[in-house]
Length: 116
Image (cartoon, rainbow, N blue to C red; front, side):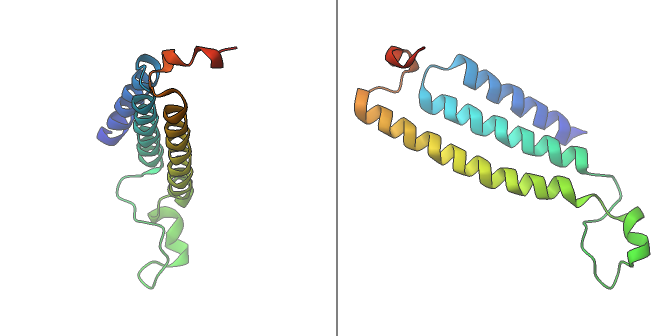
């Protein structure tokens, strides 16, 4: 329950950072914080109290696995999402550096020519 609340709090903080900040780097940090909150939320939803990790070994028989093991899918999705989030964050940082080299500013309002 606590991890779920922390995940929701991080999502709200990250979304606030994305929507209210004018600095591109701060917006990217807001995205990263929101991404971390989503990971925590998915893991907390997939967790079941008093169950073990989905590792099949000699101490856990196949018959008992259904009732004693948490679902491995949320954990696998979070691991994949972490890698994708890292790549997206790196790409956004590269874009921010290139934008800074061209305009000399990281303020989003200085990029009015990119509006529709």
